[in-house]
Image (cartoon, rainbow, N blue to C red; front, side, top):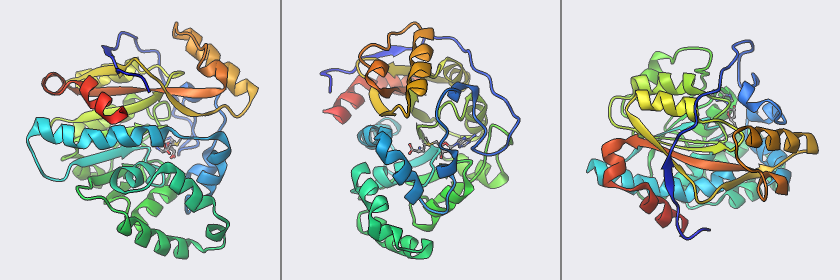
Length: 313
Ligand SMILES: C[S@@+](CC[C@H](N)C(=O)[O-])C[C@H]1O[C@@H](n2cnc3c(N)ncnc32)[C@H](O)[C@@H]1O
């Protein structure tokens, strides 16, 4: 970990667009072109295939996000002066992994062990749900946030709801449709939006719709691949009154490349943003960066450097 996490404003400009040809999470955004598809494990009845599939690639971005997201809860309370349960929306929530890590005394390693264990393979979905409900209830942290999840993968969201990781869950794709009335209602009180592994699949289109229905000040904390341009999304957030800062002193390992083609595509994408892939993508891993978007007065009252330093050290 670095000694200090510097933050800078975003200067990059938008480049992204998206197609609307195929429904569901299997429709690749142009920003994700060149990446290996994991669509077959995103919408299973339970998370076992997801963890089995991603373990060999050491997918780990929710682990890096865990401490930072946990640190954002009290920081948010400190600037808003509210001591109620913080309302979080996890975008691309999948099987509720960020909810598990944010609100429970568990690690991503624990989850990898739990869901790839041969004993778990022998269970039916119902048995797994029963076991998970008890596990998450037992490990719940005091001061847990109220969790709403959004993901185009309906089965994944249903699982997260069934085991109690999400208070509310929505299997909707806002790249393709407007939010349902129930989702609109759930968005009103949201104070913090989190996202890992999702930007690129979701674009400014999704965020514009989300932000239009959030009633009060909101923070957006997004871990974003270095191969993805966040400029257009930051512009959209700016139109909703949020100032975006990027942590510049460190990057976060996301996962190993699945093959040489994927690595080459990532290296080219990073070079296209005028940055160097040396010592990062050249070493075999995707790297993500943290972007934090907040109302200007919140950013001034509670400097992002401080939040990140405390989370990281
Ligand atoms: C790499 S996974 C990340 C899941 C989780 N956040 C994590 O870090 O483990 C990407 C997720 O994005 C979801 N997704 C893809 N396209 C989407 C869309 N248009 N709207 C909402 N979710 C989408 C997929 O279903 C999948 O759950």
